[in-house]
Image 1 (spheres, helix red, strand yellow):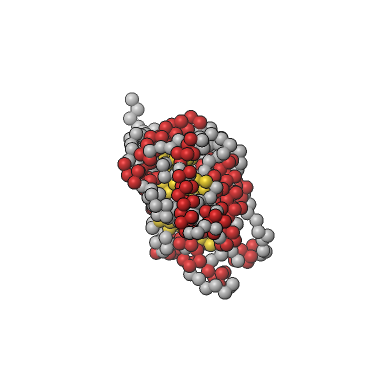
Image 2 (image 1 turned 45 degrees about the vertical axis):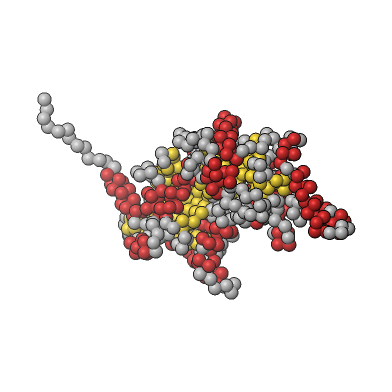
Length: 525
């Protein structure tokens, strides 16, 4: 037997492999030690650190790592490589494949001077054609312009966004998550807004069309926080959530994605149920005050009805008279809408209508059955409401509902009045509908309507106050929910404690009706 080890042949491609390693080492340095330190001193991770924290450990496969701007010596040998300021590739989140791309603020602040637009475009196309969720980590201008571009290119460009058609396509194809983890402006702001779910970090993130130095030219001297901080954009609706740390932003993204399929060609995944499907909570019969002038808290009702700990709210501080979010019922992911009587009594403002429209579109796009806990006295009324075009936005929200093909289940908790109250299901399709004994409905509430409808009777009475009270008492008996049930205008009145078992039944009935594939209409941001 030959005891000598086999002869190792020289690698004929070792010079090229050495150069590849050298170029990758340059890419790993990002914008250099000083700029990386500045990023860390600002309490922010670098893009490579962010990707490692977002993805399952060791799963990132980068694309285009050595793309950038190189300098060579007199012999045409590489001296240095400044990588492009966009890093992207594939990886996994909770074991599921995703595409992730992010701006490198350490290289020219993420601006066009150091970007390679084809990387942005391939990132979007990869998510679209592989049918994978896309996570965009945004900081800076997101590959957008800078006034320095004029000097570096020698000309001014006509504005255009190459590849935006893929962003548009992805809104109707795959979950698109945006994480704004620093100052975000221009095209970066557009990318963050063009998502199904957008998150920023409090006191470290800001979002604006143009930053404070540009805005100051208009006469407004504002800090980043005053112009585009999280308090501004949670209420503007440009973002959905704000967190204290980048780690929390990554966790929010993971949780959001857990309710959704990888693309419209799949179905939202069920988890093994751990909550009692027959749970009947006694506190539900005490949840609604008999005094209609008293508000109550809707979120505890939502959390009681869905699987314990599963409610994931989206857009809490925008359009606040309607609560929206995801949850699980018997392990099945569902979309949740619920009126919030703590704001405008649950009445729909123009902002609420826009929130409802987008949420219905998202549920339809990703095949999530809808559960709606209704307490809506109608559209907000008054001069300010009219100035914001509430009826126009309301019609858009209603149209979004009527365009859905997902299963619906509505529970009328208290009020359902007027056009906005009517917008609680797709009226052209089957929807399961229940009402609690506290349910009240009609063309408009009696309060405020009696004076208009019975003006002559009241003014002609010897005691107008007593006459009004007499009419109100008579009408209150006639508007009993049980009178409506006699005429089958409401299908079922239920004991509030039995609501969860009925929702569990709905979730299981709806599950086989979910049909993968693209929607008949294309979702927009």
